[in-house]
Image (cartoon, rainbow, N blue to C red):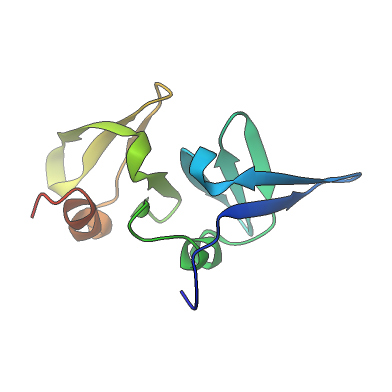
Length: 113
């Protein structure tokens, strides 16, 4: 991440551009070359998850799966699963399962390792 982390994301749609504050984002889901932002509602943003994560503060967001990233503040509970995975319970009631290859990132983000 070069410079300061992004504080807002400009999401383009057909007739408008919606400004989504990064602080309002709970989670990010990859959808091909797009990212679904979960905030007050969902937004579809044209950018890869990898590119967007490079613009966000790593102290605030963690990639937990090749298709999912979370705001650390949105995670309410972690439940260890088999093979080094975790079930992450989020503030909005959703549960996301981490990928094995992201175990170290999850442990580091939540200061568990």
